[in-house]
Image (cartoon, rainbow, N blue to C red; front, side, top):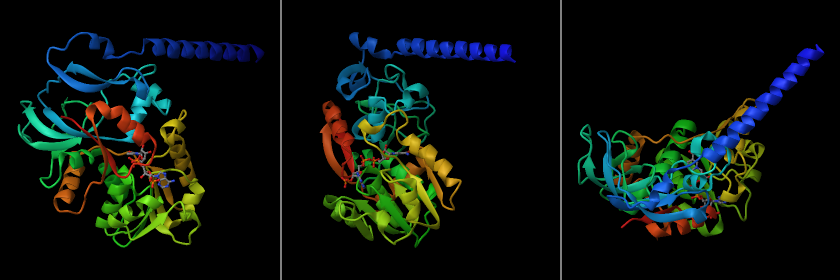
Length: 370
Ligand SMILES: NC(=O)c1ccc[n+]([C@@H]2O[C@H](COP(=O)([O-])OP(=O)(O)OC[C@H]3O[C@@H](n4cnc5c(N)ncnc54)[C@H](OP(=O)(O)O)[C@@H]3O)[C@@H](O)[C@H]2O)c1
């Protein structure tokens, strides 16, 4: 017995050393294509690149203009929008994402930005649903640059004629998240009471309008300066979190959408009806991410949900052409109006992200790409 134990300890020890060496070697081998930046591109375009983790390392560079493959579009970007998603990748936080393939020492993918709106300049030979000259919007890695090449069947749709490129660029991540969280995860029904914590930010401003269009009775939570904005988006009631604690109220909600993640699960459960649903979207600022960030709360919610009658869990948005088209139709019919806080130039992406990282954007932060 003693011998077996000795061998188990030895094997565990060797495995630990091997794992350590593996992580150590992978860390130092982790690299990206920034070494190419020294050589002049044959067909240059301007883009923001992120060679090393950290906002201070973002730079505007001349890189090779992308060439669409048979299934892609070449889109000249007119506007892009900034999401917390971007700072997660730029800062490499929460740290766990570095282990999940984002790049241990340096970001693997050096192009940043996702949400874009622009004009199709060329299409691959298999593309039948778009043509050069179409104005489009959607999501594709590298949106903080003059061109992107989205796949024609993925997250890209025709831009409604009644919205600007800036408004259209604001939609992809925040609009799809709000739609899928309320419709698919929250299963919001007409007449139900919906609480939106963080109603004045990127996701929140879309969520208030989408919840209203689903027929819900909507309560939004925000700070004093945003009360009028949230009311103007259609919220039936607005709770100013600097004056009132929504978890102390007697009101009960069928669905709570949580864009902030600043309350405990028990507090959130306490505002739900007996069969209510809590949908966690995200939370925590750039400096509060640690190893797991919002994922820690998501795991906890999965466990917590097993012991209560209410459904509590996180949702991850799934970029889809179908949902972008639904959002485009809502904008065209006037049911959905993107809210734009500030606009920055392409070279000012670091300042735009720094502003978003403060956690108090009113609607969406936009980048114009000339
Ligand atoms: N799961 C997914 O697929 C997914 C998709 C998109 C985003 N997310 C996550 O969702 C979160 C929200 O994204 P976002 O784009 O909406 O971010 P955002 O635009 O930066 O949200 C900022 C908003 O949060 C509000 N806020 C800050 N503290 C608050 C508090 N204590 N109570 C209520 N509101 C508060 C601010 O309102 P005041 O200025 O009035 O305080 C501000 O309007 C982020 O954590 C993001 O990473 C997740």
